[in-house]
Image 1 (cartoon, helix red, strand yellow):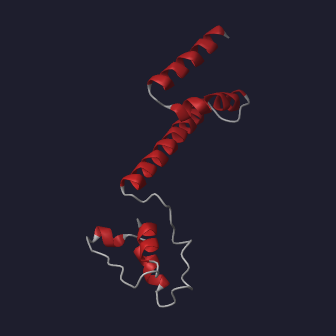
Image 2 (tube, rainbow, N blue to C red; image 1 turned 90 degrees about the horizontal axis):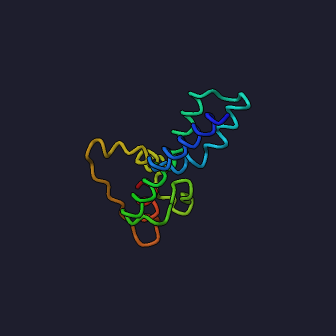
Image 3 (cartoon, rainbow, N blue to C red; image 1 turned 45 degrees about the vertical axis):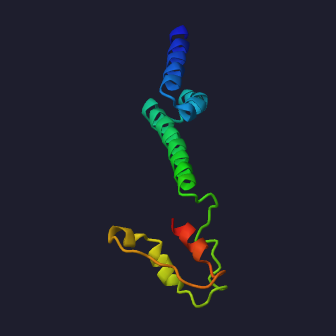
Amino acid sequence: MTMHASTIDSIRKSLVGLRMPRALEALDATLRRIEQGEIDGIQAFDELLVEELTLRESRRIKAALMMARLTTIKTLAGFDFAFQPSLDKNRIMALAELKFIERAEVVHLLGPPGTGKSHLATALA
């Protein structure tokens, strides 16, 4: 049992050294799941890595949004297409696929103030 505890301490130190805070946070719960036979060692390892990658990806997205000065999160789901009936919803949904980026095309959103241009641009971004 001492060997087991020292191994867990070593894992904790390694996670700290590797700067993997989410994996460290999830370690105890993951070890309990191994002890209960819910998962094996490989699954546990995978789950810890997925937890850490998820945290890092969310941090990366948050930093990218801040760098792009898109601090307010707006989505196409939150856009009221009924408010702007002249707007073709299918065309906007096609834009959301972002294929225009691969084709290196420019998209211009034109219209008077209050028509949702900024909301759509932020949602697409």
